[in-house]
Amino acid sequence: MDTKKEVLSILDEVLNLGGAAAQFELDTPLLGALPDLDSMAVVGLINILEERFGFFIEDDEIDGSTFASVGSLVEFVNGKLA
Image 1 (tube, rainbow, N blue to C red):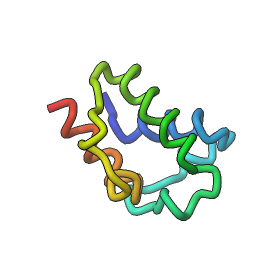
Image 2 (image 1 turned 135 degrees about the horizontal axis):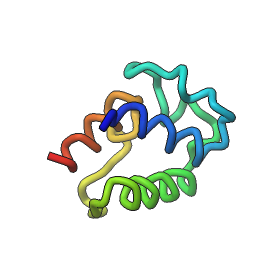
Image 3 (image 1 turned 60 degrees about the vertical axis):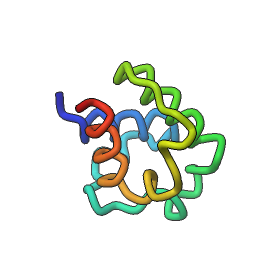
Image 4 (image 1 turned 135 degrees about the vertical axis):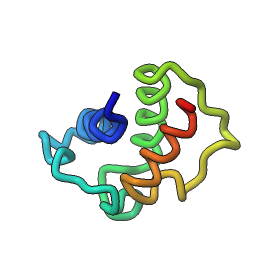
């Protein structure tokens, strides 16, 4: 499975980016850089990550740094999958 590709697909879906997320690189900033990535979008993103990847995210496992960039989010997902 290509975790980055799947994470970008989920970002695109949750934020209604119309395919723009496919152009994001690992160093693309997320939280604070994408206006649509607000607290409600983060909750939606977490829910879909859990559903698609089949894991559960505890509240104390995440903070703002998890959503700092595409790379930090992909790294988090890969850590949960390991």
